[in-house]
Image 1 (tube, one colour):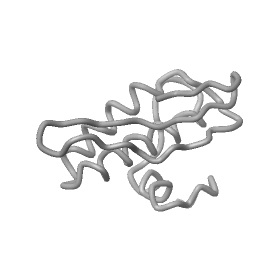
Image 2: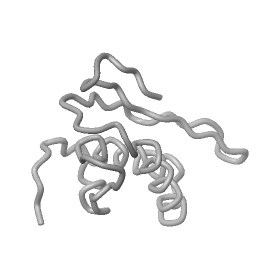
Image 3: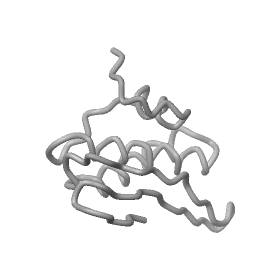
Amino acid sequence: MRKSHSADYNRWSACLRDRDNGFKLSRRYEITDMVDRVGGGDSFSAALIYALNNYEDRQQALEFAVAASCLKHSIPGDFNRVGVVEVEKLMAGDGSGRVQR
């Protein structure tokens, strides 16, 4: 669920509904100084597929997908270059943007 304020400032969140677990709403991110919107939806979809296969909790899977897509907005081009550890850090509340490799 994108809310565009300007070309480089968006709010970003998502929802997930399934037959067994009902409706889930993710955390909302304020994305400022966006680099590129291209690939945001693709990265969300790919991350959701990954997370649904690797997290038992549907809320965690949704949060992973939204965080991965949020990070993609800081990367130019169509390919999300972040790893699982970086996504999980953002999920845990570390929004510093510091790359630690």
